[in-house]
Length: 423
Image (cartoon, rainbow, N blue to C red; front, side):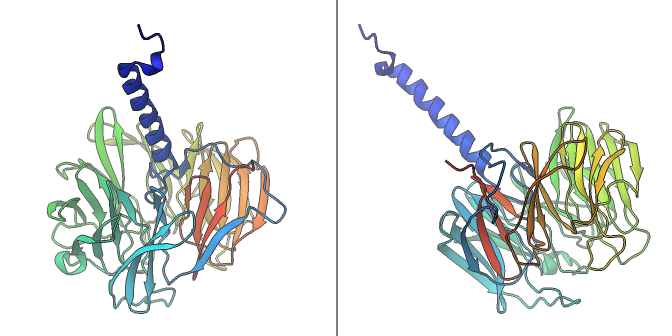
């Protein structure tokens, strides 16, 4: 009789399945495969980050010179996807996340020119799902690539195919992979404001709305047992059924003047959706019904996000209120807002503009001036626990946080910074 359970074939099989499940769960939670992380809410699931930094700041593991653009990196399965512009080509590069060494590269021509002279590179963070990489260029080129090799699987010219407009700063929707579809906010003509493509073939699945495109990326959530896709277009919020593209409801929410954009991604908590925009538009909290909504609260003096999406923790929102444009008055402030009432609990000025990521009980702020701050995610008061000048100025792209390392790009460099606890 075999008294050692480890030698029992059934037990060994069960143990192997359990081990693989745990490993996969850890691996998935440590990836940052799309804009704002695994759940598109700016939350890092790991618990391996240090609570304090050395005086000089956390160590830079590697850095490398890169091309132009505002597209932040995506990290999955130990690989980093960089989307940038080199000369007259939009370029997708796959790097070893630990070393920064290039594994493969693919490019294609682009003639995009920024009307304001800011930057003529791509804007959209890539998405990685099911062994594929999805990128969306400033001229509307949607590509699907093989993660392992960089081989092109399919591509769609959305600008030509759907007569999508250039917008103020080019096209910038980060692809959302939902089920068998890749969902895009492209602002095309003839009912192609929001478009779904088959993720394996690029074939058109459906199109919906006549809304122009914004600079916000779509998100998906299950509310009361129903799956919804939420897209913050130039006109406002559109809620759609992901399989059919049926528009469930629309909520107008945009500035009253043309020279404005909607950029922050909708944030879904339970049956509530938080929308926020600058340009005298403001924030609103909506409660979703089966095919309708009700307004819980709204206001332009609470938490008006310009481009950086807020994060949520334990009943409170944390984010930047106000315009991030240089010299604009009043300057932005970091705020804590009670989620269900809109009450401002605290506001901290003098920081400048940046992005915010939630890691356990801390806010990691990547500031445009190159500083990085660690702030307690607490509603009582602003409490800064660490600050360091790690990067050069010009840090506006969304960062990625994977396996305890922060990956962030400036105008011409990509950095890997080790935020893990010291052993």
